[in-house]
Length: 256
Image (cartoon, rainbow, N blue to C red; front, side):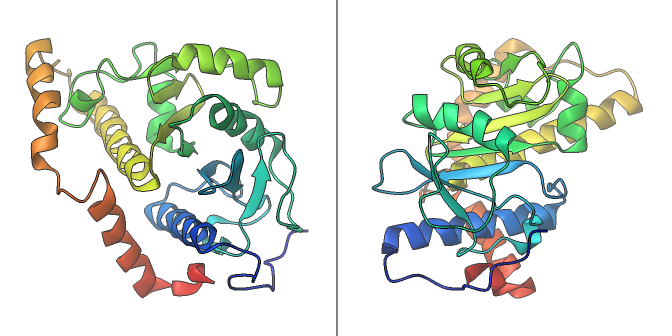
């Protein structure tokens, strides 16, 4: 049975950059838990370790998102070797799916996989995400799709995942859930937040009546102008920092 690690805080052999990445990722897990995006002890958010080739951080298998801390995150390489002596196991499905993208995509610094109700519901429809609401309009033409093959533990599926993703960085795993990756954790977080809102509203719209599609020319203008409503600190940075402040007020234990 997994228990929360007693070791807390930055170890002497850990670089300041790794510790900062650990705290950022631990905060993200706590935020997901607060937003209701956790899935018991399953699903994953992974983050590359700065200045270390082929190393990334992942949640300890067996812990709830609300139990993840900076010190108990597990550092592994893309071949699955534990690099920090962690006593925790790593979910095989999480490793198989995330390692293939970390291995082949240099810009996949942060990868998020969720099983939210709305995300799974939309992924299970023939249409996928439709151009019927403000948030969805940002994603039209930018989402890849991958057919369900069962739980992701077979390495050969990784080749098909990468091929189906192509040059996009958002994927609907059909009948399964969503996958988001980005150059930074705040950017991945904001993309996930926007995608989740798009899926929630699509599900609600279907229950409310007949959805109205946004015309392609309006979608093009919308996508062009989105950057005009962002703060200059970088994609997702102010959004993520705002929620870190909120989580800190609730439980700052993630920092340990």
